Length: 87
Image (cartoon, rainbow, N blue to C red; front, side, top):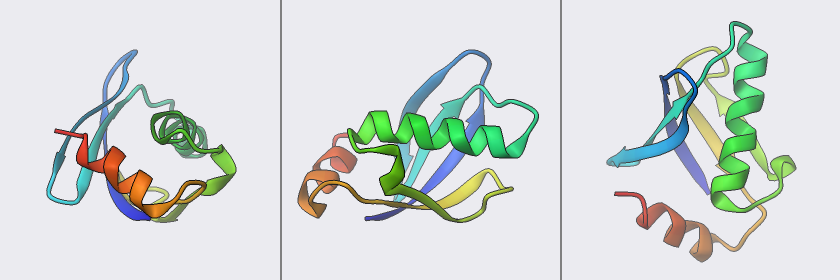
């Protein structure tokens, strides 16, 4: 499943705060290095969607706050249920 993620800088927090249309809003404590920030986002999304980290790939926006992310590792209908549970 391909989703868009909007990263919101927030000290000491990692949480999905909502969804606006098809964009999932995620609060993250961002380190200075972009690569570390992307790794932290992938780890958090893997935990949230209950999939292995290897099944999550940032397709676009590695250096931007809004990213296009491909999530695999579970059947599409299960991933859609997780998405629908986000207020």
